[in-house]
Length: 364
Image (cartoon, rainbow, N blue to C red; front, top):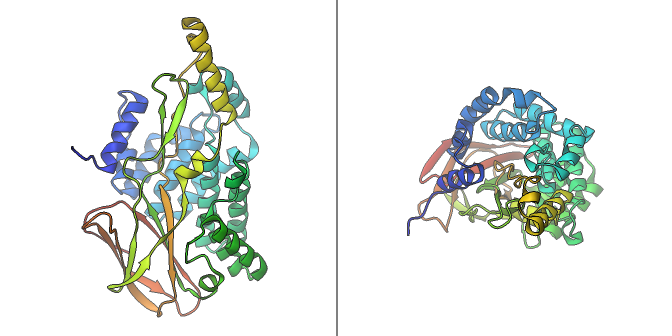
């Protein structure tokens, strides 16, 4: 049996979702880990959609551009793109078009993202502001992410994003708000029980925090029987465990904070989902007459987010260190990052995006 790589699977599924349309270059660049090229290409080819708030893909192209910018290390550009997206989400621009699409063709829908995608938008804006030292703005964004999670239909899944709680705890710590930092880290531990790094001791004492993003975000496909309905599904090659080595010595495994596919699965049916099911039922009952007034499911998705975000933290000696990620489930696959500094005071936060490149060496 031939095993396709994650990037090839992505292209196969994407082509299945959009027909025979050509795949934009920026998508290929992203899957290959060429993030600066991805950012340039998406800004060049999607310029109108990026600026046009009334365009149905305005939010989608901006959050995809933000992903490219984050991993390219251009946090200023990432914040600008996420700002365009949150302006639309916060102000209700496109609301009438969104309502209309529940009744008319789904292809006309103004994209604002599912609950898990909006969570991620606020999470990444918080992370960017955190990295920039804008802790009040970071706190606001992380809290917006948590408020968005509250919209999840399943009550048990309304506070299950440990990544956001964890970063909120780190933010409160730097704002010298010990009480709220303690509450946030406890919430993170409840959301991801068994994660050894979600303790007050690690929060207060560790000076190196590594956030490891692994795998590719979930995709949507049309139902084979009722094309009015879409299904969220994980990538064929999910994220795997990461063993962290520092200066050649194993320090232990990174531990999961959030899985975006599971976040999406726990949302329940949205109003759009219910409307689409109604369309499918209408087609079944009334055949071609109803089919003439219905469209196919919307399969647009922020597939540039990772499958999983994991964390590793430790108290290390100050100075530069070499960090290597090894993947026990994928023999021979590792990533090495050189000159990762640990300060004499404070904490160094390192964001690593893993693409499973064999024997890859990445200089930071």
